[in-house]
Length: 254
Image 1 (cartoon, rainbow, N blue to C red):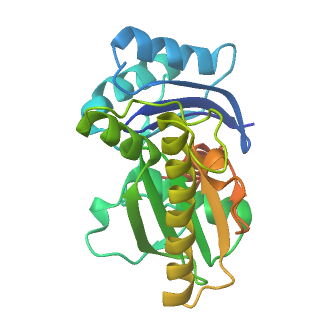
Image 2: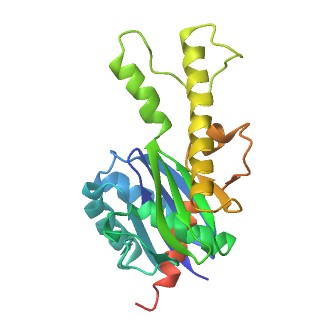
């Protein structure tokens, strides 16, 4: 039985979990800016409690956080952590100029798309601080994607750059038309974001000849953003972490 600590450090939130033979267990979250030795160590200990660990994998888009996570993962698991990059075997062929610029989370998503759901083509949408779309071809090649503003960036920008618009909770009530400022902003976010997803997805399907591509979605806002959308997205909240566990297995020999 393989027990691997998987860590995904995003711009806003960090996810930590125990991957056990493809299952994602003991998942926890903390703000990425909370990265003291104590908080990182506690998160790792929570994931490994009472379990013999075979390894650890770190996926990060915040380079300044890497050192503390790598150090604490090594200390708590007794193994040298794997830091995800294009140099590893990620389960798909990378056909992309300057592969070193691809976000590690996007590589993990591509790996999981093939490892969990089978051969491409596939389009993976990740609803985080940024909204990313990644494309895997029928020959299992990662060829790039699209990056758009995420929901937090849209709503936070309105609050920061206007005098009267507030910071809102997206998950509250709204009607067919906004009857107050907050409702109006919720509708704008919900319907507007749905439009971004629909148009980008259709663009990729048409431009790349991938009308039959498998549509996968992950990230904290995926379920909220896709509610009511007339497109067959499969929501997989563990996609990135599962991809990290796959990358660990693929690179065991090295």
